[in-house]
Length: 415
Image 1: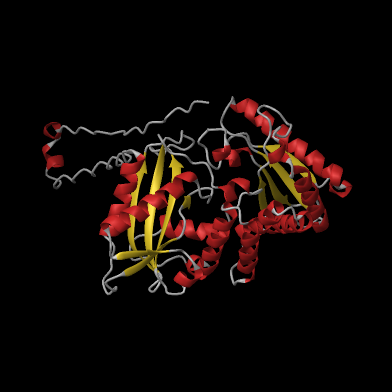
Image 2: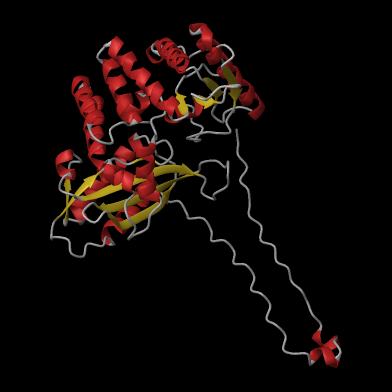
């Protein structure tokens, strides 16, 4: 569907006073009070520029303005992989950003020595580059079309745990491929959690001189292990990935959704069905304990039937079985919420999302009879999109998700 861009109006109220027509006594009452200044017009939105130019602008600002007072002649720099600022996923676009930033550092900023993001490098308290890449409506219109990408880069000195530089820019969407990287594309659930939120907050919610978000600092070792595991997964080294994910889980701060997701995915790729489903059960428990779990069930366009690609839908039956089992075990109640992308008429999307939620609800109740009367289904249409680019492909699959939210049972406690 097409979005209509709103406009901002500025209303000026002008009061004219005819002083000469006033009686002399009124004029002698005292000097006239100055009129209150008119409210300043809001600044115009940033002008998006081509992606390569925007990235270079943000990166050059970041490195040229870095506060390196007291730092050695050579500064170790590691890059904690850049992510989408809403979904928390790495993508082809963020991978391209990292590659170009590394090339820029080597050619233009030799004081920074790029090291691999690893537990060994993190132990030396280096400077860490973090960044988000987020589809936005450039004018800031709520619900408006995502017509630009916001680039946010930050340098965090892990010795002082402070932000020492920032770089921002807006990029035009042409030529950008937001397709999620393999781990995030394959993940059965929306993997953004508190650890990802702390990363985003450290990048987007700080200014130079601010402290790094404490949760980010506390979990950076786990983040480096997750980086190792994701690299192994995307290289097809699933056994190595599984070993690192399990190591991350045992590390303080390692109880994260992306770690549990990784253990499920690695086992699934290794055809270890029983351990995979045990891991998926822990993913479900994690989500339900946090009162929200978003699962990526993909449906045929305009239909309540799952997508026809068997390689994608193969685990869906097992997911539903485990969702029903874990929900029934907690003896609680759930709201099953369907979502769609923006393609199509709003009324049609509302109905379709509700029918898809009904379908999942019925499947859960068929698996566990005890859930009957404990589930309610609703449809949100496209009103709560996560990505919102309207591509209707792998890059915005999260917009076509089904969420499970714990709700109060009549006369009973929540999950």
